[in-house]
Length: 284
Image (cartoon, rainbow, N blue to C red; front, side, top):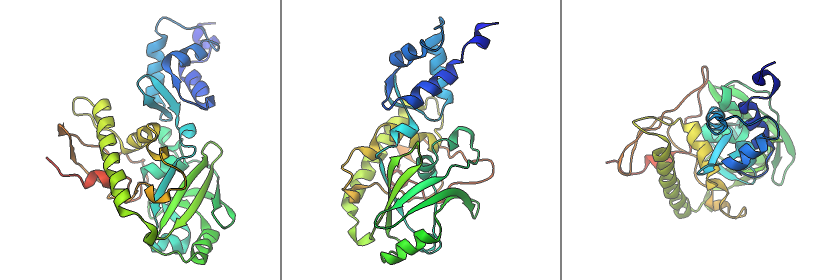
């Protein structure tokens, strides 16, 4: 029996080790842990690097340091501008960032999953939610209890739905309704500028020679850099906007860069995206 048959692959080892780690790991620590599961060959470092590149949830958080997306999402906060139809019918359309937040495994294979989510409605009941397709767009079905909760709180279109991640691995989230009157536009614009600068830095570091970075990949990198978890949980008005157009091409920094939007084979993301801040930057 060959070593390849006797021992788990580097890919499966990376999945097992990173997904089990509550905190990001350095490349050296990752290889050291993998060594407990299989012999380390001469090209181990390169093999682990290749495995990381193949795994959507293996997210860089710093040079040669990686975390598992489902773990990195915990205690992060996001903001979804609610439409009148979403509030009335009990669903939300998902952009790439929100899709990765609720379904971290989706962008590995772009296949539908049967993951059931547990959603705590702040001040209301706990409901179950699942992915479905609304008008050819990936969405989250929240149902009648969500619509009733929004109505009970006097919610309406253009209010904000604050998404708090309790435990992404277990599929546990909390939703809070925030009236649009409470929105701090200046603070949001300031965070959007920081988002644009960080996105520029990430794209420049990862895309060479005119390559394009899928929006879902950029979303994972931003989460890995702790952009959505670097402020107190109770300061909801500081949540970054997630509203924008679906397609874009913008110019940043020292040169022109573009981000490709990789869609699934059959369905697309919602026509609002967390990239609005990037679209508002002046082009060169």
